[in-house]
Image (cartoon, rainbow, N blue to C red; front, top):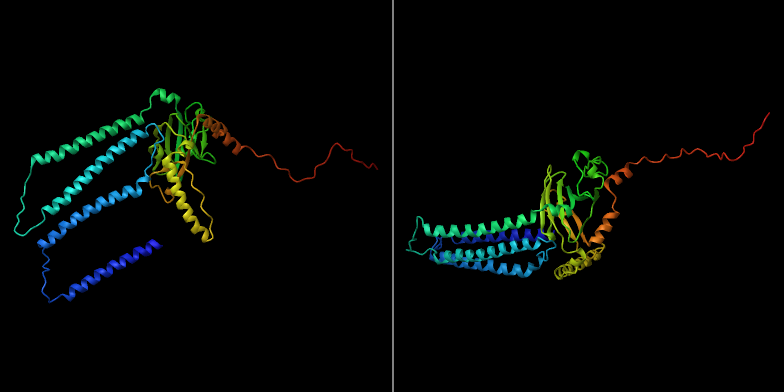
Length: 382
């Protein structure tokens, strides 16, 4: 509400200044004026210097952005391929920053240097093959290098050989408005068949429970991964286009209705170790300071203080999939291999859950008195 009021006040101030300017112009009617609606040398000089002021503003704001928000970058990657993704991003950003800094300066400098002057005639070139070749060939070479490097990196990330498949863990990520479920393939490393038409009761993923490959599948709402183990994700969507985004693992893949997409990576840092990372510790401390400040206001208004923030890996949706898109997330825990095996062993299979949920209920007593047949009843004989 405060932001809306501030915005409204600024709009009203702008309207007031505009109206005052119009009133001032009306008061100048009949007075000698140089306002001929045609730019003169003074106007052109003012605009030229404004160009320099604007490019200065761009540079100052860029430097301020690095200082104010530079700590918001993700930091240490938690997957094997994460370093390659970060390298590609760093190279791209350095090139973009260099080109942007140079071209913005040249653009505004030439706008100032060649500003209009009375009696000066512009020199016009119909074409210049040499210049056109320079500003065409250089971007082509740079972009081609970036694209080839990007394709090489992407292929390395996406390629899974047969040896990796034999030793990998296969997990299905199932997206729906507005939540995630995960299905583990079990010892056979094969997910059972599934179809949305089979969704019923606790079988929220539509798994074909008669499929032999589905007998050891396990469905969970919290994703656990063993560190150092290849994970192959099979992704499905029940309704609209979603995107499985795991930022700290530098992983993202669209979940498309009617088809299965795939992404794989190897986690390299457990949740416990990442919580002790210097960058994560600084971010958690910053968040908790903000929460403490906000909690004081909430408590003063009679509310309950916010819980302290603890870092967790998250699976997010990176497509705007509806009203509760912002809340579509699932916790990811990277365990040691021993912790992972112990956690998974405790989880029942979907078939077991189905049988328990659909087992016939024991007959309830009708409420009649129970007769003890071991006792001899008296009989009256007439």
